[in-house]
Image (cartoon, rainbow, N blue to C red; front, side, top):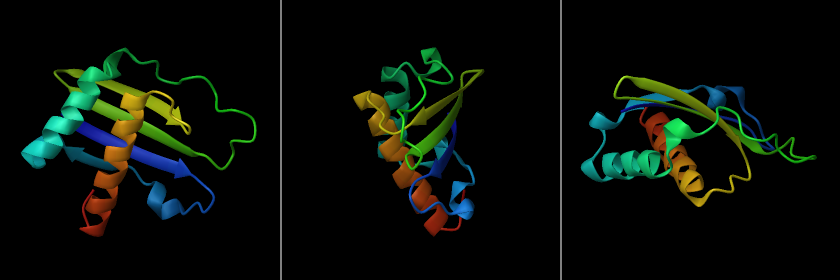
Length: 109
């Protein structure tokens, strides 16, 4: 499974940090790979609309996320904004944010 994750916005927006990070779950530890693949599957990622409802008024400083998943010959992109109300999607975003931070710290992505 190939994942591309992009995070934008927030109070202190830094353009360099909004570059997308891509990785293949095959390159992750078994635990990380299983967690991400389960979250994508359980969250029915490929069935989600590409763009959910717009964020509430006054949400200019909220984070916005773009997640693209490629798996089994399928490719789907979903755009989300804080607050992410679905607990499974929120967990996926949390895991992807942590992975992105680790990859950037290691000089990858």
